[in-house]
Image 1: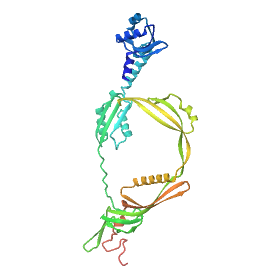
Image 2: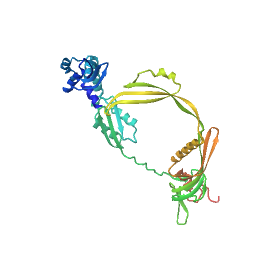
Image 3: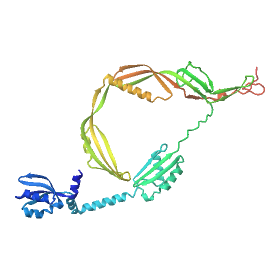
Image 4: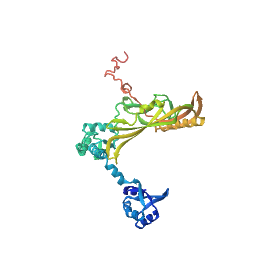
Length: 421
């Protein structure tokens, strides 16, 4: 391959030798180190290829042998450049393209942000616009050091930020500090309650008063650990109550039926093999089509559009607002497909696996039994599960549950009436 490229840049011609001493002509060329390759006969003449600089040395040999070398084809860069030099419009277009590329390279055409987790890209781009930093901004007007200081001042949770210009691309890298978990202030009290009907399998109380024991059946909303602590004096008289946030490890066991279904007969896409490509170019937000795509819509009833759009860039530094893309329209029709029972069972098992994957981590499931059945056009899998989970459901403690009814100093009731009257 490299030999062919070297020959093209040196330039060579295809010659045809006519005369009675063609063999002598070739022997003299060999003696003078003139290289001729791909020699072959055609209608009594000898044809071959020779370098351009060696062709000018054939004049003396041609006179001596009486052989005339005719040029049939000119190949290579010297001939291409000669033809190109006669067209001044090409030079003007080439020069204009260089000037346009140079002018576009003076502006920022892409802003790349990386490292953010809590702050979205749109949020950061909105703030950059407030700092007069946007696509289309002149590179000389962007002060990276000042921009870094502005971002750190605006977002206090950003520990480190770096902004640098790479050609027409502004790259911003940030490192965010880890957000501290919000401290939950236990205002008031909370009861730990049962989220559903079930049976208690484990009961450990840390704060509060247990209301149930292990092995006891409970209903939804029942209080498992009460969030009220009672205080007594030396004579075991109740002197007050205090609401607290009930804490403990309570495991609840309950049974649940889960149903998964999939259709037995479905409409599936089938591509007909017909497709059409539309090439587009988008410059500064304006889109240009090589051909009008509306001319082909009436020929395809249903079709998928596959887009392949690339942005013009050179090593991710010279990024320009030029997009070149290809849109492929693929025609398809629908066909009716009836799946066998084995395939339907596999689909249902995949649904069951996804269901188990997204269960909370504090839940453990046990499959008691499963049943496959048909219902109309659907194939159904019904699974009877036994679930063990840690309870995290709470209910607010009302003030009337823990406040004592106050009486006056004359031993009167709370309504003001005397005892026994």
